[in-house]
Amino acid sequence: MAQISRGSEWHRWEPHIHAPGTVLENQFPVDGWVQYLTALEAVTPKLRAIGITDYCVTRSYERAKSYKEGGRLPDCNLLFPNIELRLNTGTIKGNFVNIHLLVCPDDPNHVGELNRFLAQLVFGAFNDKFACTPSDLIRLGRRADPSKTDDDDALRHGCTQFKVSLDNLIDAHRDIEWAGENIPIAVSGNADGTSGVKEAADATLREEIEKAAHAIFASSLKQRDFWLGHGKATVNELRERYAGCKPCIWGSDAHDLSRVANPAEDRFCWIKGLPTFDALRQACLDPERAYVAPEPPHGPRHPRLSMR
Image 1 (cartoon, rainbow, N blue to C red):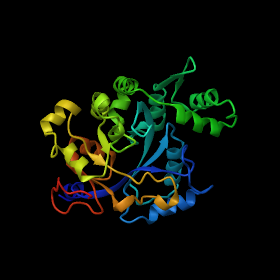
Image 2: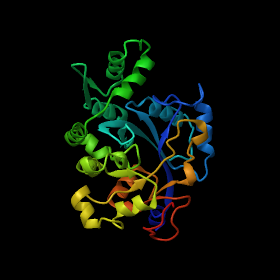
Image 3: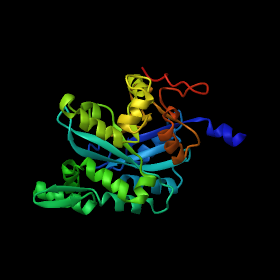
Image 4: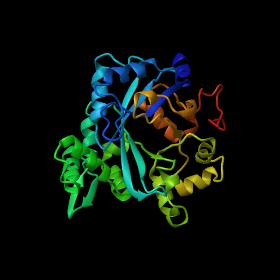
């Protein structure tokens, strides 16, 4: 009975947070890891699951993982990689749709398996092909701008150039069994995601992107209601058009110390169940188990409550 009770609790997740040295838009102090970890440890409500996010590569996650193995982040039960990629699909603002790979860390070799999967994602340019690996991203950065002689500069530039096609992502996710079992795909539902895809002409493309996703990064009541089947589309319509309902999750997307686990308007992410990756998997099957608000729901279910 105690196990059932704990499995019914809501825990705070931070599934989208960058770390010092993040490849792009790094506004953390030089050698800012101690300050960063201290800020995470001081957060209230406590973070039970943290998705360390970076563009295309795993180095930020690996650094955070080594600190946790050394005793930092003691209240965090689950630390996992969140790899942020850009699809080769434009948005109204002239950017590209952001997509996230949320990776289960249960396999001791999950970093190796993740990098094996990333190596299957390919960007074509300059009559050449570039895989989503550090060496190829550096090579891409230098091909795009020969002045980038420093490896870190070339990597950053390569990450800004690299875009993956939806077909490539779907095919690799389907063909590599480990990826299908351990990497839920999340897409941004905001202006840098599918809501930014030009309406009318690209409506079908937008639906295909959302259909491929297992979760949506969104914090509004309207979006949560839609993806639960309480909005314009019924549950059956969501099944037909988008392969089912989707959980809405949210994070601070911090690129500096002031925003660490500090999303606007306290839009905290809560997931029901023990703070393990299986709770996220379960939320993908039962999206009402994910919730965005300053506090978790009080009571068994409040599917229409969310952040206004």
